[in-house]
Amino acid sequence: AALALRPILSELGCLPVSAMIHIPKAHEVLAADGTTTTTTTVVNNNNNNNEGEEVVPRTTTTTTNPTPEWDAYMDRCWAQLEWWGTAARHHRAQVDPWDKSPALQTSPSQRNAPKLK
Image 1 (spheres, rainbow, N blue to C red):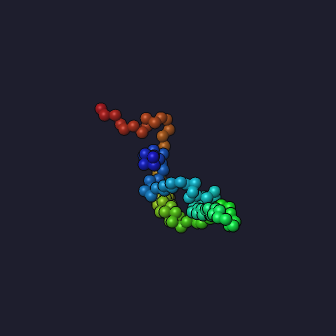
Image 2 (cartoon, rainbow, N blue to C red):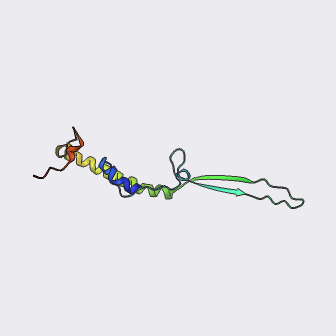
Image 3 (cartoon, one colour):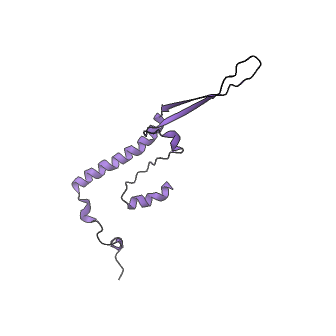
């Protein structure tokens, strides 16, 4: 789906960044505050019920840790996006982007190629 959106996003003026971010099971990778985490769950299922032994109830322990792997993976995309933004800002300071490519004012047909005679 992401590849199908690229032409649409380009038409909308979005920057073409080759490093896309794919997060399968985002609910497991992203914390509520947006930081990346790894959640490890340990289940103690020690319910031996031998004569004379105390039954230990099942317990679950969940630990959440920051993940530098995900951060490094996403940093590649952010670095490309920052590069494009900086390049566009510097170029805009030298060349007026609306000079040769004015905004459409009347209808989408303004973007049509000239008709052949």
